[in-house]
Every structure is written in C-alpha cells, then in structure tokens.
Image 1 (tube, rainbow, N blue to C red):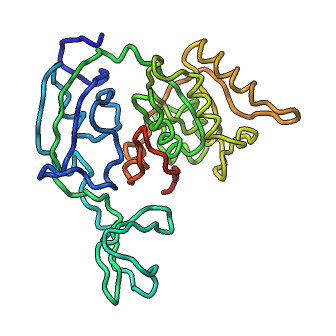
Image 2: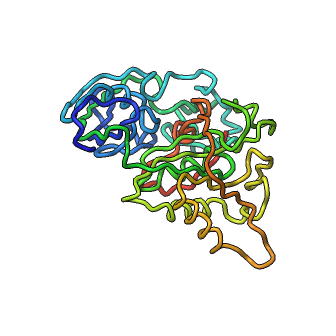
Length: 313
C-alpha cells in the first residue's frame, strides 16, 4: 500500500518530489531537461530518470528528505572523447553558426557548437552535462511495497529505441525497459537476436497505472506507432527480420481481449494484419546501454514532450 512505512527498495513504487540542478544550484540547461522533475512516480531500480535518483531513494522511508552532490557517473556520465569536442573546417560547416547552437549530424545525433573561428567550428556530441557534478534534492512522499497496483504490458514495434520513447511520454506509464521476448534461448545478447537465430523479437515492457491509462489506450499508441507496417510480416519500416516482427504480448485475459478488439477495428478488406497477439513469454532485459537510449542521447522523454522521435544510432 502507498502508506508502507518500511525502507524503499528495488521493485517498490515510489512517489517523490525531486529536483536536479547544477552544482551551484542553477536549473539544468534546456538540452539537459529530458526527464520530468517535481512530483513524479517511479519504480526503484527499473530505469528512467537519472541513476542518482534510484541510488539515493534506496533505504529512504516515507517523509525522508535528502540533499546530495552527484558524481558524473550517477548523472549524465563522464565525457567520451570519441564524441568530441572536434574541430570541423569552417568551409564545410553551415554558415551562421554561433557557440551554444545545436546542429544535427549525418547519423541524426545532435551536437553542440562550442567555439567558432575563421578557420574552424568546434562541436561536441557529449551530453551537455557530461563530466559535471550535479546537486540532487529529493523527498520521498510515499512507497508502495512491490508496486502491486501497476500492470505490465509488452509491445514489439520494430526498433525498441523509438518505441520505448513513445511509451515513456505517455501519462500513466510509470516505467519502461527494452529487451527480447518470444524466443527460445535464455538470456540472449543483442548480437544473437539481430542474427535472427534465437526467435526473439525486440520488445518494450512497461509498467503502467490502470487508473491513469487504459490498456486500450496503450494499444492505440502501439497501432499509431506501427502504422501500415501492421500489414508487413517481420518488418517495421525499413527494419526487416524476425527480430523486428510486431506484436502485443498479453499478461491477462483482459489484455488479450482488448488487444484482439483493437486489431479487429483496424482490419481492411483484402489485407491481413501480420501483428502477433500472443501470451507474454519470458522477457529478457537488453544490455544496459539500450535502456532509455534516445533519452540518454538528448531526446525529450517528458510527459509533455511533442518533438518528433528520431530513432538514430
């Protein structure tokens, strides 16, 4: 129950009031505001937000407050020299660039302009706060032991990076993770799944509050994201292979009925929907670097976000 008085631990549903600022107490820069702050809910240890939030909540009790300095490894990570800064000849850069502007690279990633001279433009694709120590303030408002009020949903919509971001933004979705399901091999790797030899498909598993968002709405979001690829077996957009087959994998009879009804409403004469609707099998977590991949790369995962989701590498 939400008035659980024990210490918060992984798997519990926590409601918190939190803020993350720069080390001197200033708001994060705009391009680092990619997660919700203030009063939010999360499942401890299940990803989303910053690692420092989960780490500091563990062991806290309802009503506890904490203010701590956060090392880069528990925030936006250390700087990666492979991602910059790098100097680009001015002759090959777009005109009119100024320090602080954001540019989009050929692979879709974003980089910040840090310096402009007559000879070169310096860009950096590291997160704006990579390598920075931050300040965290958090109050634990309530804890629900084991997050028993939440339900799970498993959706396969091709590349799981963009699919996860779509569900992250949906009000009522508390947490998301990506992984592999409906296959034969235990604990498969990304490389094995991509080879198409394990039978798995890339999948997003969510935990949601059925009092805030219905499974029917989540199915609608699935179909919106899938589009006309619903008629293509083993394919979503340009991604092809059994690891990209699309499906709704239900956890209850009620989810099954809702999913089947949502698919029936989209049927067209002379066209067969190739989407699987099957009972959920074992879900294997993907490697950590895949989790919230686009949000880590600077895309906005807040509930109010409206920018187009870009599924880049």
